[in-house]
Image 1 (cartoon, rainbow, N blue to C red):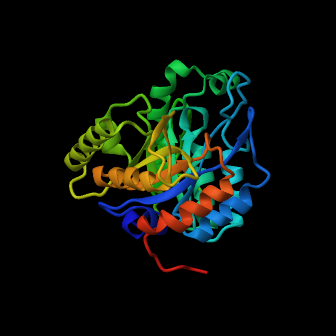
Image 2 (image 1 turned 120 degrees about the horizontal axis):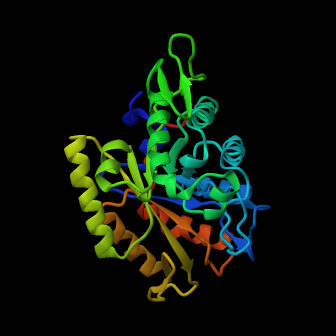
Length: 321
């Protein structure tokens, strides 16, 4: 199966259009994410018709910061959410490949795809949390090289029928060994950030690119460069661009945008204008992050679902019960 037939990929991504999703968890308290109410919120997000939920891969709590992901292991929590929702896409943003053996990642991703067909969008990254590398005894200085090696290993395991692979991290002998289960579908694999690679490598190797928000001129140029390089390396192949956006949605509909880290505090009217700008420069999916939100996430999800989502609807794909 090609990505053109993949359900989640097509619900999220169409050329010249943008869909919306959320990063989980939707709230935090002090140094800990609030996890107790996340399943009802995930269902609320799905019921409104948002395209995706995104989860981060955090191993160790860093007591010096208050940014600790969704607390639980990314694959275990993704499975939990998948089992209690129906069709919403589930994205990893992102699996940290230098910290996870590629055979394990292939096993985990393939298992998810067999149990919950065509719902996984797999973002992968080189990792930026020093304490995770320290805890696992892996040099962060080697993260770029490890990412590249593990990415190549993972891609062969997921896309080749019976590969023979010999690396210093392990060996698969295709004459008497085989990765199982095989994925139900072609799993979309998105590179997150720069992963200590060149933009040309990313355009050549990933199925798409997940990036952080930047000011409009910078993001415009980045997307333009990415599209041009993607067309060189894969002519005619659509490789979508995804980004996050931190928002603090004001109850004042007319509040002009005020910068916050990686996003804006703004009223709904101005947020809509910002979203249209992102769509116009080539962003294909945008995930809201409510890390700095002052309002309860239920209220923000409700308002965005009622008054913003209709302008950026999830692409219609027939539902399979």
